[in-house]
Length: 325
Length: 301
Image 1 (tube, rainbow over the protein chains, first blue to last red):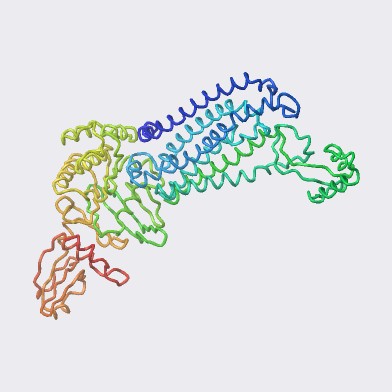
Image 2: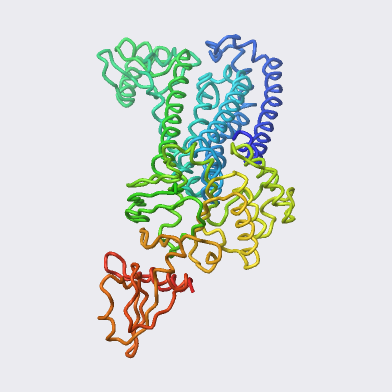
């Protein structure tokens, strides 16, 4: 059955292999150039090797323009590459997973396969299992490469590794697993390629967006002074003012207080005295954020969600094949 | 004789559509069976249930005494199945399909299949999609036979084939049957294709078996009677009228004799297979309505 699956899906395998090879080659080439630039421009020495630097952007240091320039040189490419990498699981689900079984039903070749001496359950298990193994291994390999490629940018971005949450760590492997199981079930239920592809596209994008919206709330955010949030944190709210009793204070109210202060003591009025004055009034500028050290916990939660969905969908597929068909 | 296929109260519904309703049937091993019925009669559903592709909604089906749903690994190697329109992986070369069969079937006889295809001058290195319709059908048949099955289930095996390809297909099939003593079930809505080769008949209509038995016996026990319109009353009580047609001067009836000779006033004729099948298919159904599809029945003629 393994030979059979290979013989049948050689073409898809070769095309996917080619796409992955090109993607990997581009990542290696641009990654090496970026790494060289990171070192030669001096940005590397501004950020300590382990983890995101603290205070790289502190104004007045010579590091700020250096890292800033490095960032803007590579930002455009990074955005494009991230988008392309995020599209890969969609392409996988729509163009490979959805047709995997539905095309057989459409061309009725499943009847030919089932007429051999293997059960339809084993037929599906080997096909989907083999496909899943290849997908998970290649997604993992690609993600390792992407993490290496993105490492200098992790240190140049204000929010560090969070900025590329969707393309590194464990999450992308979960996306791939979800895409393939969604495509499989859609193909099995519809038995027609185009509707299976459409459903896979809409559900995949929908679920990805939904979970991305929920992501900031995986863990209760830390609230702290907006003035000394460490670099590498993921800001999940806008800045806001709060008084000593813990009530929100609107920007209008704060503006009013500032203008009162400005009119009463115009001689000493400047940026730092204003903050001092507000502090004396018990008002602080706060923000909610997820600290850098939660990155891997969030990756685990995100991956667990998508792997859980994938396993559920595969189980549903096998049930459907065995009971409903 | 042991039964090759046995269905008891077999029912299959697809949503609200009923394909088979309480269908009971026993096909003894060793026959070449014509499974005949109009389109939508449930022939394909019956064959798919026999292969375990579908689960019955109710009732039970056994192949050589085993359930295809519960014991597929016992049933599948013993049954060769050729689905309607003979689907094959069209990108595969003939040789690759043979390899496919070899890897998926424990009783595979690839040499025999190769021999059969070579005898028909079908090139093994050519992709299936580039063969003629007749050649493709022969490849499908050779693959099914190479499984070394005890029974062949062929779903409309001659559809979309030209007359020459039909004859060649049946030739190869009957040679194999003669060599290996297979039980064969051929479904068709065209009885003419099967008349010369089958010795057992199953008529399926409206999801139920209308008639089943050895063709010779069935032809012996049925007669066409022609007489005046008033003669009907004289018919013996245990003679079942399957089909009748009337003109002002004459009544023609196809009857089942139940072993007794018919009444003397009638002019009596032997029936042909096609006539017999048509009579049963145009018989009013159990719920009182006549078989509704004259267009499809017309294909039988």
